[in-house]
Length: 57
Image (cartoon, rainbow, N blue to C red):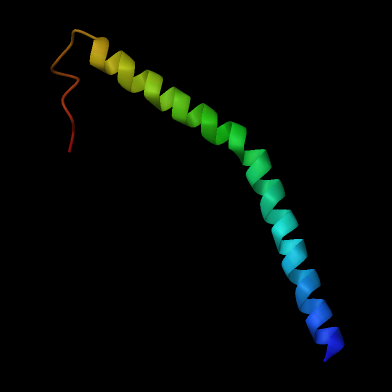
């Protein structure tokens, strides 16, 4: 029983480490995507072409 509990703790710990590494690696890409999308919408809002600025939805 001890080894099952220890194994579960080790597996959870490894999962948390892997998830933390993935989030740390992907955070700059997500931040860049958010900034890029914001700049794109700002550009579209500031442009004078209202026909192409209509939402396709």
